[in-house]
Image (cartoon, rainbow, N blue to C red):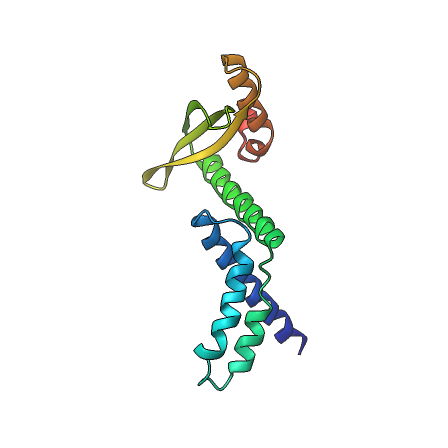
Length: 163
């Protein structure tokens, strides 16, 4: 009995992560989760009217956790997981290279984008590693400071702080 409740809860959580993934990929606001949940609820009766387990399906859909705060937290979890996976790939690579570019966003905040290139299997992979805000000026020492903060923060997992 308890196992089926846990499994059901796991399925709902997995489904909500998949929905959040699509919300994030489409660059939609976190409030889209509630909109989608309400849309599902409105359509479910018609879509599943001929299904024998219609009530079970509708009950499962109503359990989806898609409030704006939940969507925000799940985007952060997904983001942390993607960074962790990328750092593991980099840590296992024999060599890697970094490329950086500084630009100013539309709110006049200087941003440093960092790309990493590394050998992944038999092919080279190139991924965005970080987007770091630069406080103050954009001199070499400011860029160095931002990079060192990354290397000794999130980048420490990949062994960047060893270099």
